[in-house]
Length: 118
Picture 1 (tube, one colour):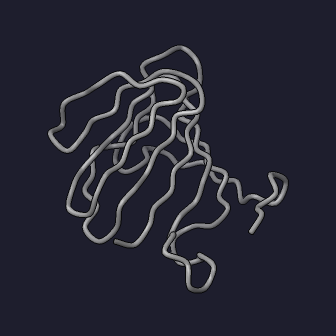
Picture 2 (tube, one colour):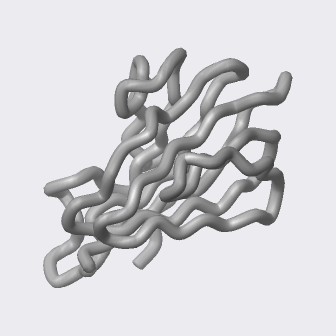
């Protein structure tokens, strides 16, 4: 299944997940709009502007993968301890765990986000 760039739904989210600043999203599909039968619930390219953050939040009934494509930031894992992330890094937050992400660099932080049923 192919999702062409020009067909992606573009959304700007203010204070994502209770965080700060804004995040520019390009959705292949959002929650509730996934292809029938897919374990994936969300698939998106997301961009945090400098100084912006996805607030620390829990995944009660799904899990989320981030793949950092460009930029620099800090990932907050289930223990809420921050670790630096950059291009090529991947994170996985399992059902029942929490996470957050902040752009600590001077360039946009671009990452792929995928949420799947667990």
